[in-house]
Image 1 (cartoon, rainbow, N blue to C red):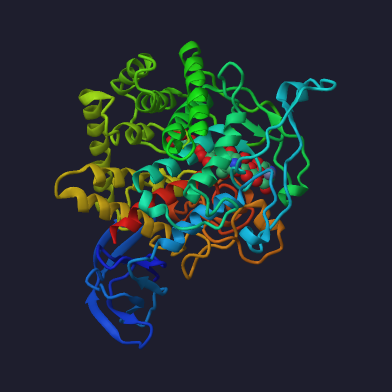
Image 2: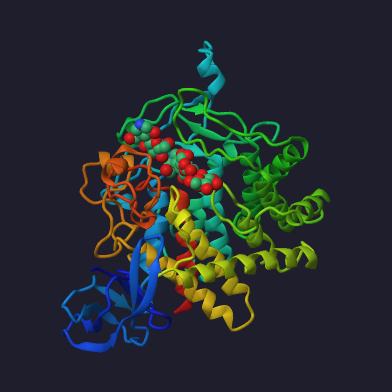
Length: 545
Ligand code: G3I
Ligand code: 9MR
Ligand code: ZN
């Protein structure tokens, strides 16, 4: 029997419920003097389908005095140590954001900012078009495409993945600016802008390079195949500009409109550049149908394939309507068309960005979308948030997750559902505000150890945090521990990489399909867009103290 709880800790107020797999009496022991400050008996949590566990809940919400504690059961089992206090998530949020700095491509990471995780400038040579590469064109045209963040454990840079990560971060800043006042110790720190905006600017400037003359946006910039497990500066494969996809164009238009608004008070020129770029891509969207993306034969870098671009187009129309109201009537026409159609409205991942429309529209103080569209979006938000509440009550680990939701990057699903519950809490005017908030918190608790494996899926946060992310620099740098603050992809019910397939027996329940192995890219990689929703979450949670 394990005792599963948030190994980082809990704020003084709010629910504190650990999960275990056998009934027990328990005490909450204060670490400093080994005194029991609370005792109780577990209650039944029911059978949990995603983990296969019969669960019991250890509720210690009544403990509100700051300190370091552990749970001790009647049969002398100890939980990991955890903290109760009001600033428990501050360092976590800073580390989650600092990881983006470690992903910077095209510049050296120096000791002053990167500590021991230094490396020389990487991927500084010009890129060429995929077509020229395949045709072996002599003296192909080449382009400066340097900059941006490495996507993940690989060195690719992908437009849709980048735009979505930026969106989580920029909306988090827009909604919770008070949570972004501390220094990230990056080269731009102590400037006139909050550090998070400087960090995002690094990615945005690269993304601008991905826009073609006609407003199209290239889907990705990667080598033909993934690099070996080397430091980024030792990867000398030719970087290629892959074709345009309509998902990339729409995400680009949306995130540039968002950036134009967010950066306006700090950098008028950049704000204008972003707006002009967004308008140009909007025009492309009006004139072009869906354009998908698939890897050419033999190429194995990330595909980010997506069969539907309506959610991306919806987000773009919502963002442009809000930021660029009055410039083009088609913004509202298109937004109405998409919102009033039956497409989903509540997802925040790279495939389905529809929920970003909620963020663009429902927090617009000018209400540019109008009452009818706001109502349609609000109804969708609460309908889906309430479905999550039902799932939470149906499963022993108290999560808005069904067994089939443990896909590649399930921790992103966990985070995205927490985001939805946060929006429900922010927009709810009744006594359900606290219910949604507590539900959102349960997903953070899961990430930090309240799960069937008792693992914290964020590096260096929690006594039993995972240690071996599938990340090329982490493997190649010779440093024992990974950087702090990386969210793992997490359990995947049908893992595909050999490291996981070999180690996870057939029939393992979805929540347990995970290995902390550096080779397991389908259960243990890291990405910018798995950290970014966690930044959104912690930025909100930090204000709840
Ligand atoms: O959309 C379907 C859904 O309808 C279905 O029910 C479900 C069942 O498994 O699958 C869903 O598709 C999954 C898709 O992600 C969307 O979640 C695919 O099975 C799954 O294979 C796919 O995984 C993606 C993976 O690349 C492989 O393409 C991950 O989301 C994505 O995060 C990951 O991204 C990689 C990049 O390619 C390269 N860089 C690293 C990065 C992280 O591993
Ligand atoms: O390391 C790669 C990882 O970043 C990607 O998410 C993943 C899917 O695109 O691919 C990984 O690379 C593997 C490749 O696909 C197959 N050969 C082994 C590579 C890593 O060990
Ligand atoms: Zn690089």
